[in-house]
Image (cartoon, rainbow, N blue to C red; front, side):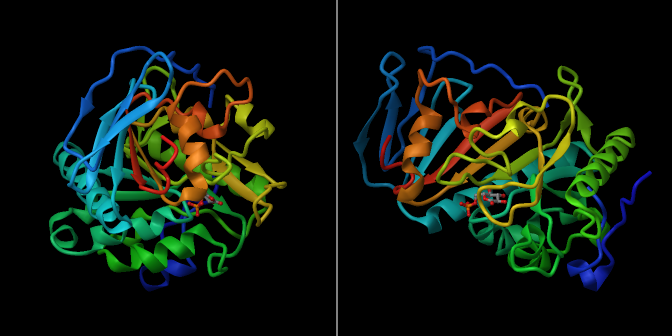
Amino acid sequence: MASCRALSANVRLLAISSFTRLLPRVPLNSRFVAVENAFNSLRLNPNSGEFRGTRTKSSMAETMTPKSRGKVNVFDSEDDLSASLAKYTADLSNRISQERDSFTVVLSGGSLVKSLRKIVEQPYIDSVDWSKWRVFWVDERVVPKDHPESNYLLAFTEFLSKIPIPAGNVYTINDALSAEGAADDYETCLKHLVKSKVIDRSESSGFPKFDLMLMGMGPDGHIASLFPGHPLLQEDETWVSFIKDSPKPPPERISFTLPVINSSANIAFVVTGAGKATAVRRALTDSADSDLLPVQLVAPEGELVWFLDKGAASKL
Ligand SMILES: O=C1O[C@H](COP(=O)(O)O)[C@@H](O)[C@H](O)[C@H]1O
């Protein structure tokens, strides 16, 4: 088997282990529930695809869209968003940790990581059973682990270094390999962990089924390292693939494929800033476009939840 080494304690920074069918979009229908406890109470009109809302005084709006679109939470401030994300993640962790020996969490890079900051504070830092966490990356840049562009380095600095997670439960790419080799190596590692039942397998798709994916989205609607119009979006067999022509630097990356993402038990999209409002709107409203953004292709087996700030929700 290819290397699947565990992180050695202190040098979590440098050691490490090594680390798809497109689901059709579920058509928009009228079965949605709007929960109005809210700053902006958003309602999706199933015919027009338009959101309509009213303003109230509290700091969050929560809306149920059709299942394929998920539940949408809009926050007054990024601080409120971070607090709610921490509670959501801790609640899920507590529930799953009581049922199973492992809680499998997949991180993206980018702005998501900063939004995780409140889960490393009280009460969660003490209440979460971090020993159950197994951490993976939905995508990684093929750079050394101490490189400023490394998704691992960002997560280590902002999050992993602040929690008492066993070093061996953090699964990063083997940065000594080429992009192709690192993707292969990570997939082999995942297969081993599915076989040993650390990671669930989806009964319907056969792909690994992670408990939680915490993901960001780029202004162009990219998720993980799946970019608009890129052939990697069509990948329907491999679990982890690679690209060498990423439109966003650095060019070489590895990424979970869409079938793996869509087999998840839970996905949380965390999106902030007005620069992403157009992509958010496209993701949450119906579209006649034939060129769907990568984010529009996400339809997990389980639950999809959106954490948006006012800027990201400004075009809904
Ligand atoms: O390059 C990447 O970008 C996306 C989005 O990042 P953000 O900073 O705009 O939130 C990120 O989700 C992905 O993991 C990363 O590799």
